[in-house]
Image (cartoon, rainbow, N blue to C red):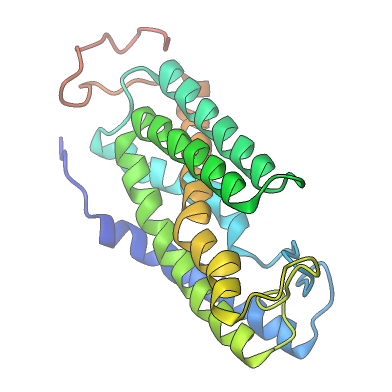
Length: 227
């Protein structure tokens, strides 16, 4: 059984799909397509958005790994790790959005909780983690470029829409705080923890095991129930 895979080859197609969705949404917002197809509000949720691709590609990448023999040896434990990772990521999001706490404190807390969530996601399924992380950067870096251009040009899209309560701290601090930091860490974390959980759902429910476990694990019987 082939025990290797090419990250760039597997991620290239999904990355192009994400780029197409980003450009399509930008076009729709610029020419005035209706909601809910697009949404020009701050953090506006819409049908066109790369965020909805995360569970789809989580399952897609898991399906690509399975024929290569890359499934966790204990699906139940991996599912628990992934669920705990998502819970930590959500806790960090709640913390960063909690008013009355100094921003630096909220940011450090969010960073710590999210990093812990990522660590658990890595333990859950290292190979899927690697693919999702690569896809996350491939899909979110174009968004960062679009946001930069939109904010500089005041395009009137959700990419340059700002919270009215944001202090007037200048372009670069605002760009770093609202676009760069989220798109080079927090959205990648979301992509990994959510995509990995969805990627684990199907093999967990079907209770399938690989014939030979990953290197460093004890061989298990294929009929053994996941723990």
